[in-house]
Image (cartoon, rainbow, N blue to C red):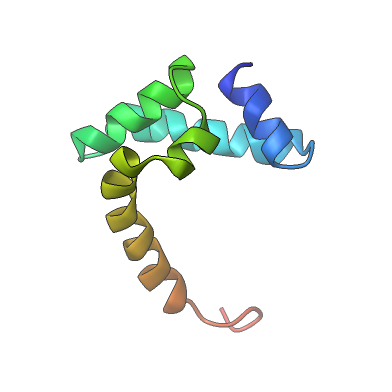
Length: 84
C-alpha cells in the first residue's frame, strides 16, 4: 500500500484530505528544520513505515511529541470559529 492509499483509507475515503496530508508530508520531508522529522516523513512517503506504525512507535514518539505539543499550543490560541 502506498502512503497515499493509506491516507485515503485513514481519512475514510476522502481523497482530498489524503492529498492535503500527502502534500504536508512532502513539505516536511523537503523543508523541516528538524532532521528527525524529515526522516519520519521520508520513511512514511517511501513506505518503510506506515502512519499507523508511527503512531504506535516509541522511536517516533520522541520526534513527534514535541511538534504535536507546539501544534496544540498554536491551535489553543486560535480565535473561535467565526471570530477571525
